[in-house]
Image (cartoon, rainbow, N blue to C red):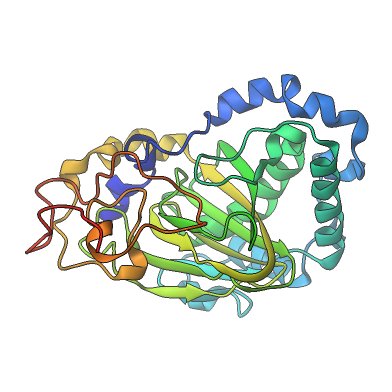
Length: 329
């Protein structure tokens, strides 16, 4: 039930996310950073619509084959390399060291070029939209060839088709963004793979589904591994915990299914939220979005995400004894 109205609700509810539609991005690619960066590219294959087999982990090939032949099997029966971290959150070996090195070198080269680029959203200050530097063909090929078969097996309704994607990197260091506030994604399926480097901390905490009575209850802490990907519904609340040392960089692909969104217009309506079944777990609180954040915690420092008009939980959906005002402790 909650998936039906929750998927993608962020396009209406999370006004702080400031990215353009995938269609708008595609139209602008040639007039954006991509055009300026073309002559400076370091590794041409990263900008082509093909994925050499040497770029992917051997286990990923097995997973994709198993997913194509799964015939309705339960997730834990599909392939031993596919790990269910918690209900609805899956991880698996993804990229080889060859790809990781190529990709990271290209991103470093782009940063060194000093070419201005839009950030993925207003909650991340140091990322890059890889579509806009010319990688859209490669990411699209990877999405269709690898992400989609897995997502379709695990989330057959939300991933019945993929029409577009919003793809970007995020980067966390002790001197830049430390982490990312709790949020949900404006995606139907989110793919998130760690590409570097050495770091401590910077875990990924998952809570519940947007709109469910327990959507602000903690469910799992995921520990990133370089080359390993995590896959989940965009409506799953999650946040990047503060990094303690080093640098973590991830490639994130938000996949969109237009047919699914058209068939579930109620996902955008707050009146379909369930009443919360109790106070939130503090780790699941969002400074950006939650009305009661400051009743439990102090304003965060060094974490991407700002506070504009917090709305969660919607009026009338508050738990019993909801704080009368959102005031700092």
